Image (cartoon, rainbow, N blue to C red):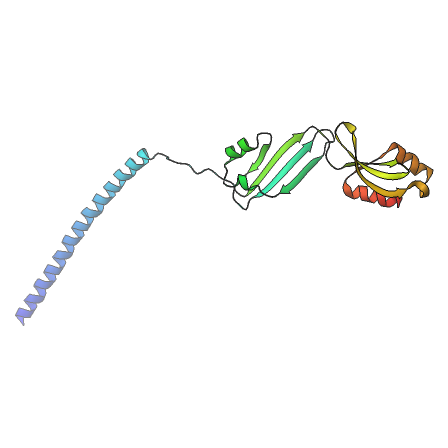
Length: 187
């Protein structure tokens, strides 16, 4: 029985002693790794240099809009258009080179807005006039020039004298919906 007690005592002593040695080496290892980590961080922060930057580029599913300001009439047109295939994967600077006459108002990978000032009148100005006893529609172009747009086929025989005088002078209309409404008034 004394032999068993001695074996248990020595086993416990060896066990406690090995735990102490393990703890001592673990503390040394931890201390060494922390000092190495601090050394690595100080070296890495001082030696990090940017080798390449990621520039934002146009995505294939980006929305594309054109904003046109017409100086002569003061109208602003904002139209979404189909994204041109040649601008996919271009950076902002590459897009500026491709469209030098346009200002880039908005640039992101998903949204492009280009704007431009135009020294002209917009396409939505029309004039109703009498030509050969029929009402014709003219498009008002640059410098107040009238370009034939379409004939309405409406004769002057059922119009009032006031309407005839107004049509001889020309009735200015803005917008295609207002044009259609004005034509309907004479039918």
